[in-house]
Every structure is written in C-alpha cells, then in structure tokens.
Image 1 (spheres, rainbow, N blue to C red):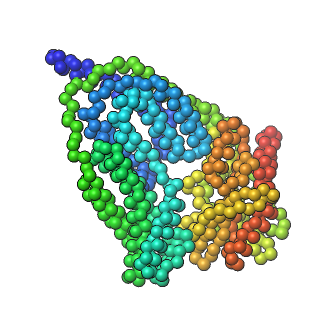
Image 2: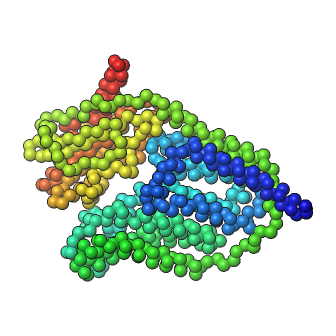
Image 3: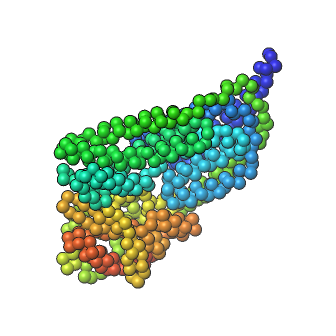
Length: 513
C-alpha cells in the first residue's frame, strides 16, 4: 500500500466517524422533536406552497459538495457554543407552550445549526454557512404574511387600474369594476410564488455568485419582485376582464394566467442574474482530507443532543397535568334587555380550531340582532390551541372579509382593544368584533394572548381562556352597528370573572367526584 493511500484513508476515517455521529444525532433530535418533523412533512405533502421542502436537504447537500474544494479545514470543536443549547431548548419550550409550530421548527433548525457550529468550529462552519442556512427553508413558514399580501395586492392592483383609467371601487380586498366584482382571496395573495422565488433565489445566489453583496442583491430582488409581480398579475386579470367584458372566462383561467406570468418573471430573473455571475470556480481539491482528533467534535455532538433535551423533558412533565373538564360549562350570561332567540340559523360562524367547549347563539333587543360565538380552552402543557393561524372570523366559503382593524371600547370601566371586521355574503353584511380573554386579560392581540396563556402554563397554574366573537347586521350604518355591539358586550358582564367562575365550578365538580 502506498504512503499516499494510507494518508488518504487516515484522513477520511475521522470524517466518516464524525459523519456517522452527526447522522445519529440528527435521528436523536428527530425523536426529541418528532412533532416538528411530522408537522413539516405533512405541510410539504398537503400544500403546493411548500412542496419544495422535499428538495431543501438534497439541495443543501449538493451545495456543500459543490464547495468541496474549500472544505480543506479540519473541524476544531468550539465547546463554548454549547452554552447556547440550554437557551435554545428553553426557547423551544416557550414556543411549544405557546403552540406556535412554525416557531418551534425554526428553533429546532437553530439547535441543529448550534450543534454543527460546536462540532465543526467557526472556520469550517463559515465555509458551509450558505448551504447550512438554506436548511431554514425546511420550515413551512410565511402564512402570517397572507393578510398583508392580500391587502397590498388589492391596493396595488387598484392603483394600476386607476392609472389605466378603469372605473374602480375597492373595499378592502374586494375590487369592483363595471364588468363585475373581484376578491383577492388568500390563494391569490402571492405567497406561493413568493416562497418559491425565495427558495429558488437562495439556491441560484449560492450556486452562481461568490461575493456576499451579489448574493444579498439577488435575494432582495427575489423577495421584492414577486410581491409587485403579483399585484401586476391581479391588475392584468381584472384589466383583461374589462377589455373582454367576460369576467367568467377570465376567472376560470386566472390560475393558468398567473403561473404563466410568474414563470416568465422567474426566467427574467435568471437571465438578468446570469449577466452578473461569477465565472471563476475554485480548483478541485486534490490533497487528502486533513486528519483531526475526533474526541472534541464527538463530545460536542453528544453534549448538544443532551442539552437540547432539557425543554422536551420539562414539557413532558407539563403535559402530564390533569386537564380541566369544560364539557359542562355554561355560556356567559347576557343581561336584559337582550333575550335569547329560540331559532338561530344565521350562516355566520367563526372557524376555530379544537375548542374544549363552544357556544353559538343569537340574541335580540328592540329590533336589533346579535350573533355570538364563544370558544373555551383549558390550557396545559402542549394542549393550547387558543390562537391558531387557521382560525377565521367567518367561513370564507360563505363570507368575504372586506376590511379589518381594531377599535377601543369601554368594557365595564376598563378600556380594551377589540378586533373589527366587516363581512359580506351576498346582500348581507355584518360588523364583527372579536377578542381573547386570558388569565384576567382582555386583548385583541393574538401574540399577547399567547404570551399570557403561556406564562400561566409554565408557572403550573390551570386557567380557562376564551375566544369571543359577536356580529350584527350593518343595516343602519357602521356607527349604529357599533352601538349595538357595545350594548351587547356590556350586557355580557365581566368576562374574566365569568371564566373564574367556570374554573371554580370545574374544581368543585372534580372534588365531588
């Protein structure tokens, strides 16, 4: 056996052992955080927006292989990085208690990054930085941007229609022209193309460019162009309907038109991007892989997995708490002059994820009608679905939201903020108010509701929280509808006190049994 062959084997053996250790660590982390892995997998399968998730890991590995000529630095484990792992594990615990799966997944990827940095050390990790950061695209994120993208697309399309001298009226995401009405639905917000553009843009920038400023410029372009392009697409669809006076045909084919337009935009980005490509590539590596001491990297990998398990271990303890049984809880009482309607078949109904108890009823007073929806939640450990991105103030197959916002109201002497939405279904309109009641706090802010609820869970206190929504017809104007809703909210009484009574009654029932 030649000396060079022996040196090559001596250099590759530690790499293989470290690679096997990292693979085992990845499996261990997958077991600790299996809900995050399964959650991402299900979204990749179910949503065309995130189908690219199946390609992220192969693409990242290819990009690392493409840089193999630069990976001639041996791992120099940095055990100081391990100090980040308990903090990241506790951050994951907070995200898990909050029930924000997207945040949990982002923290898990960050845990992986910290483990790799601790095992490799900064000199080697830096040479793989781009491909390793590409792994964040494994997380199906961005749904929170949909309402903002809807509003921007609608406003931008209206502005372009006005420039084209098309008579147009807009009410939030509803756009009306003489030929018909158009709604910028969630599927038309442009998130799918934005996510695809980001995934492709990152791959293109890492593959074609070597300077950081070119990569940053192309990534910025990949973020900005699809947002404005979607506004142009919406304008084009509406303008085509205006020119042809055939709204039905345009609506039937608008998905095909949209993807054809987006494909053209993507090709244009590629053509422009290639004009600034860095042509030079590093020479292929011919030297043997450098040998290194295995002990420190293996210790870093094992310690990273052990420290990452702190959060899941404590959450397992919280998950074993005895849940409150809300199956017999009564709805919040409503004082006179409001009376419960015997027949309530109104089509308005919020779409809320997995409440422990829900009430849907209707009331009337002096010729005014109010529909009410109340969802109760008993939170403990990971059982916490009060705030979910899937929650909707109305079934979007029946009702369209034209505007949304917030307003300050007086709730039994306390000024609070509630969310406001104007809803339309054919000729019917509704003004809806909705808010959360959590641990004595009334808020319209989902993030605040999450944080207040998480604090109670982590402190080991059982609590009952609620999502409350009320709606009334806008027959005599928005101002009159607001007065009706304000009167009804006042008649419901202090809602934090109601939740305290529910909790006390549940405890008494449990003690009797």
